[in-house]
Image (tube, rainbow, N blue to C red; front, side, top):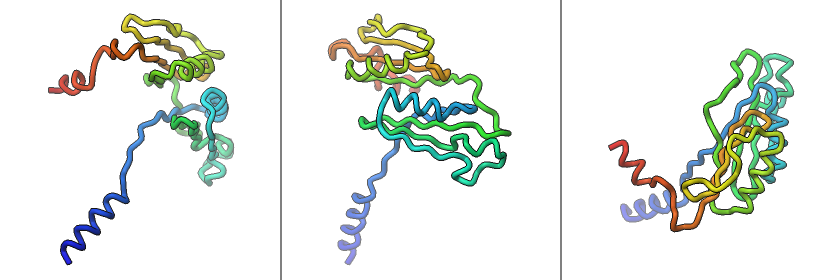
Length: 170
């Protein structure tokens, strides 16, 4: 009987695989819908929108059409979320967060850069960086800072490594 419970518990644990996802959630005063439409044009995928009115959460009639939650799920797994700030809630004026796109898919990352660059302020053009990767920084038309890093050859590797970071806390 105890062996049967142990086997059942192990089986249940296998079926309940837990996952965690970290993704950007960008706050706007009133531009979330426009921003999500723009990001959809850059990344593709499926966009879902819920307004404060649809959710029954509009305490001020002026908030009814603002986005309480918008999400973009791209075919390649990228996830981006956005929302507007309702009246009475402090809106994001300036952010110290940047959204980073990185990897070795040069074609996709260059296409994303080119899309994000429309109407953007280019801080650092997408070009070969001293560490061997192709890198660029911009602030898009909605005021969101983006970093794009296209990995160089495998033998150049990143400047730091996970062991460097974990050892720093030491």
